[in-house]
Image 1 (cartoon, rainbow, N blue to C red):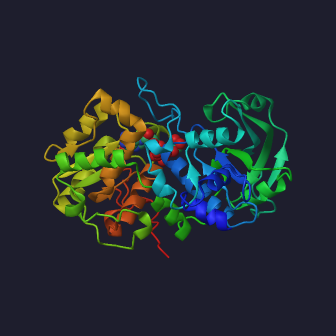
Image 2 (cartoon, rainbow, N blue to C red):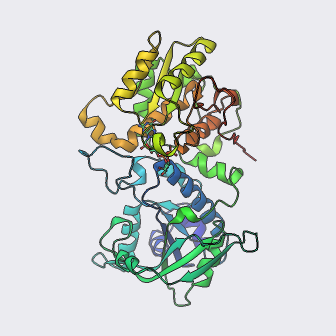
Image 3 (cartoon, protein in one colour):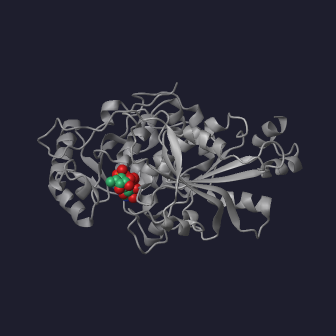
Length: 430
Ligand SMILES: C[C@@H]1O[C@H](OP(=O)(O)OP(=O)(O)OC[C@H]2O[C@@H](n3cnc4c(=O)[nH]c(N)nc43)[C@H](O)[C@@H]2O)[C@@H](O)[C@H](O)[C@@H]1O
């Protein structure tokens, strides 16, 4: 409608008062706030993938009657299992700590949790406790294949007793409760959430409907790797503070800059064009070497430090490079050993230059800096089945590297060059 067009463009000089009412959901259709959370044991980069499933869904939902004003609320990041620094506060970090939300909003309507609280209070009053309308806790079906076929479906089941106590502390906020809590067996893609929202829609919704999906990682992609996936993915640019830290490190220690490396990108992702082969990258190789839990869960595919060093060495010699940047969750000892196996080369890793910088970046920010530096290397080699590695592949696809300089995977052993490699998912623009 007319008012939506004006207010969504933020042309507030036109009718500021009416736009305020519109923002509250008083004019036009009600606003659906879709909140979600992910199983606590999942890591940062898997969560980024869950975000894409939901962002693509919300962008679709906004074309449907009754949902044109749907908004996705981003779940804060709280003490992820892989964040091991105990002396810094890593609770309820907003997405704006890691990502450029203005860029993400060029894909669909997403807001951070603080913005959600502001919007809630603006409508219901500053002192009102935040009460959601519906919470759905998802769980896999015991039998995913009925008569051998996988059909999209959901079904209510009785919530286990322990889950009742969950109500009231969603997303780690003690002041967040709900009117309804439903446990569902769920299997299918994000589009099935539309049916779910319709099934439970109440006719008395006035200005806003607040829905939270728990265990959203159970929701599958509609289509992985298609144009929508990549548009949402490209919109996920990192926060400028993190990009700057990485740029300074590249300049100071790797003699690398966007101009030189041919990795300059347009100010907005919406202006990006396919540029396969356009990127050259800095004069260094990047290795993403996943350790920690991968040494147990995935010991059959994760190389020893020595074998990783030999694989890096062979590549450095082949490419005529002298420097390797190492991104890793390895211990200091492992890094020391790796360096020892690569004595004739420069082995570099990113370490914050002060406690203050570590405190500001936090473990998650340091990992992002690692990813940015790897995205700008001449050649990249990553860990088998690590989503951390996959996100670097994607970043390099966006920057326009030739595929063979990106889609590389460590083998368990340097002798086994034919080992199973990560899947190649090239970027698509149309
Ligand atoms: C076994 C599975 O592994 C999956 O991990 P995977 O895909 O590698 O990747 P992520 O989902 O990101 O989880 C791994 C986490 O470990 C740290 N980490 C890993 N590599 C690096 C690195 O190079 N530099 C730095 N600074 N930090 C690193 C970082 O906190 C990262 O988010 C998890 O998502 C799943 O939950 C599960 O645990």
